[in-house]
Length: 455
Image 1 (cartoon, rainbow, N blue to C red):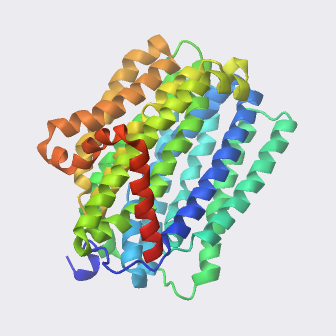
Image 2: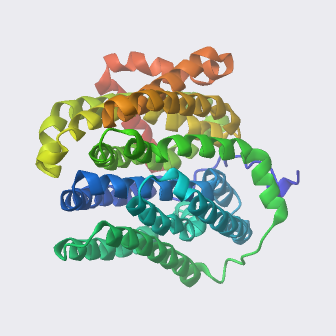
């Protein structure tokens, strides 16, 4: 492999991009969208009712599966490569877009052909055939990654939120116009197309002269040589996660069960996504200290692992106490069963946060393959449990399947494999930090403060 396509080694020099600013803008965007998205989800759920909202969630789940298949898990490597070789960003972007466009057409057409077999009623099938084409604009996701990797998150966030706000207003109009579920599916597709068109045009406007897009077969081959574990993990994990609402829609006693699960997932997925955003910004900085300051690296890595577990447990406890009151108040009495579903799903958080952190460490070190056994085990357990629990218990069975699979897949597989046990010492030591939560957060705050001063 040539030097230009070798796994990039993180720079030991302080990063030019200000990590604190990146975290602020990305987390601020996620917070705004969490509040607005959950609020709009509540209005749509109330407007459609559990049955129709379940159908809508089943279709959106398949569209998300299609979007994940377009990325194939290469987004983490693209993010790393752009940050490590900014002078070759045009070639990296061009290669990514060309690959993703080909995959988008193949995946959308393939799932369209399979929709008749995967979806058991005509209305949900129509919804699915519309939203599956959300995979096509997803092909330009690497343009977003360029802004994030180069530390220019502010214009990206403003652009994405301009489209998102417009779409939010349009959805309000649809609700007041008493529109059917089909209109909301069309709106989802239009919003996705407008978002990526705006981001691509922003990149061309601000940096079009700096970037010369081209397709590089050698770069593509390098991604596949290193990233084939990502491909398998995306196929397994996405298939298990993204089709869960559809599984409940097809196999539960009533269609309303899918609506209960969909409502709870809308809140849960926002919470889980925050772990990915923070990890993508902070963990590369921690890994960069591994050679220059090993002792500080060890302290920072352990502090991050401690906080990941503690934050997940704290959120799960808070939701357990409030969900029985908040869910009926937000979604209405018809969605009362979603409260128990939400509580169960949030207890997967204490695993999701440490798992995301460990996965990002593996990616930064070029050891992504170490995550493969965990993902395979988690997907297998989730599918097996769902097949047995969903027909009996509906949305509750699906939530138990998801949470149990996360715990058993991550910690169970880690205990079984010596190499994973060694690589996961920080995650296991983190349990002892639960006895001193204040000290845990103080240590993490000290690390973040030091990182900001060095940026």
